[in-house]
Length: 165
Image (cartoon, rainbow, N blue to C red; front, side):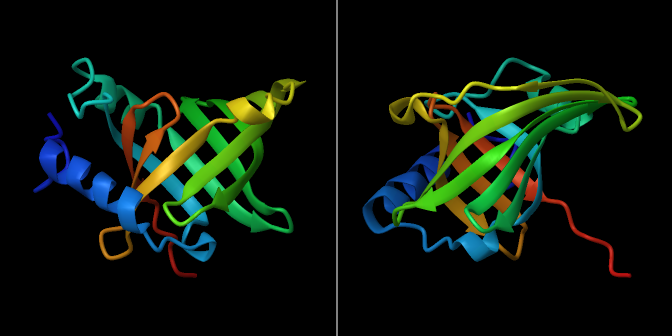
């Protein structure tokens, strides 16, 4: 069950998702830019993943980085281990009132200590099969974002706070 989020049960999250489906979330594109660190994932039903999955994803610094651009948003999904970094980059757009964050990765890059070891362009997916996150809730005060992916799994990210100069 969804127990890794303090004070949030599986029933609470699934209830919030039903509300988002009915009435939308009010999440705007302006609220999304930033670095979002993956905190926890759950199955389609809200069951916990295999033991250690959340810990491993946090240890690998799994992150979702969104930035505004002329086409909507640029998107980066990456994991890091020591000096190694595996990074998928592409573009995203926000659609609908729920809304859906629809994205497509255009390139894959493997680097070590900032030096690119391998870069590959990725084929464009069929438009009907584009990956997406159905956004459930963005809590500005707690700095959390919850969504369901195209495959049915649930995820929670925490916004990485930028240090003031």
